[in-house]
Length: 69
Image (tube, rainbow, N blue to C red; front, side, top):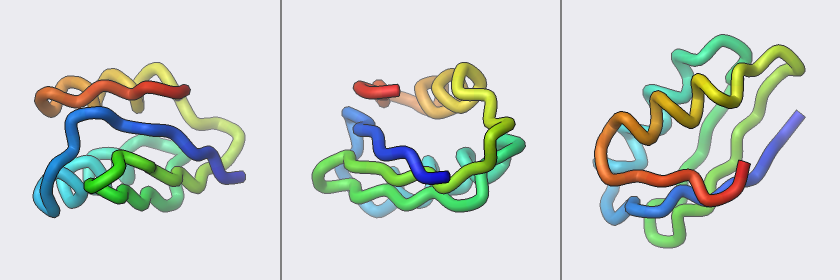
């Protein structure tokens, strides 16, 4: 399964790498691809993903806010 969402607050390649690395640690996430310029993010996942945990972990990294989830 794939889900598209927008993460506000991304502005550089370090943001991209940080978010992708943290997302991949969430059980159920197969792949995460962040376009830091737009915040557009594609999450490939299985059915058992914990969306609340993913949102919390990403937003706890810094000044990021998941706009659609």
